[in-house]
Image (cartoon, rainbow, N blue to C red; front, side):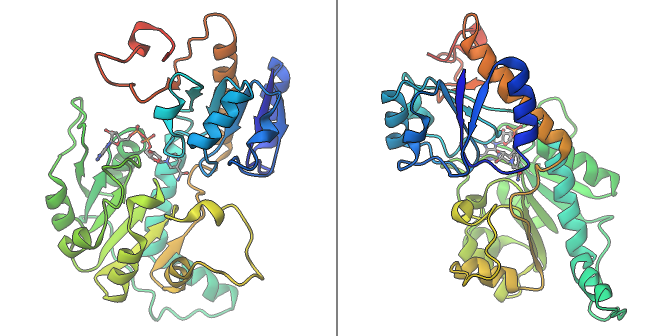
Length: 344
Ligand code: NAI
């Protein structure tokens, strides 16, 4: 079985070579991202393996389909970069629904603590033998209200962590969990009552720019905004304006709206062309990590193992894979997964 593996990074290879080698899956590793110009690299392959910044749009899907590629295996949970509606009937899509929700939830708390206790400033100071405390005053998390948007796997774990810190938790979810004590509120109330807001929902047409100028206007002065989900959940220009107006107290960003051509690459020594990101990074109260929240040994191992299992279960036997997804998933009348069938 041949699989074209796009956007390969050095940390991807060991686990994929291990599990691929053990199971007869021959990964062809390409550093380039998948897009219309590079799709031809998958010629002769049974499947492509893609990550969050590969483009799987109408044109790419049509090219892959014409070349006989049967499967898009996402090595991520999110799939907003795949036009799953267009893929329906042509190419099956599988993803890794959970590989370590702890990795992302823990990174979220790491960003929050770093920000509110000014660890990022202190680290640089003490490296320079500057032991002054001036300007490093933080605040206690205990007793503060955190508003969590999206209470799925990652959001729920982040809530548990916050409770461990003695924080009050409120949450908003379009599909609230029934099996929990979580206090759900309307989005407006969450914006108005929270000291800290953390995003853990997927990027959809409904959630795009869920934090925009209007939402920021409703928030408390000094609000801390954390995004470890998808960049376009926040209108970055509105965020920057909120910071400049001193309405937003701090922002912790692991994702950025325009990250696709920036994150995972080294631009040190180059003239950096994204003015909004450059301005955000220049702010003392903004911390940016480059889509790093997932990056733990446990997560990388689980991603490789599940991706290889997804590929094997699709090509072996009846081709039914629990981790297949399509635009009908979750629709009670149309969804075939409940009947243990392929999506199409
Ligand atoms: P999940 O599917 O378990 O949870 C998502 C939650 O969002 C669900 O409870 C769902 O009901 C809710 N939701 C859906 N539409 C909504 C809406 N319109 N408004 C409010 N809530 C809505 O997903 P999981 O595993 O918790 O992941 C959350 C997000 O984290 C993913 O969508 C992905 O974008 C991001 N992620 C980021 C990573 C990183 O490295 N920074 C790694 C993995 C995931």
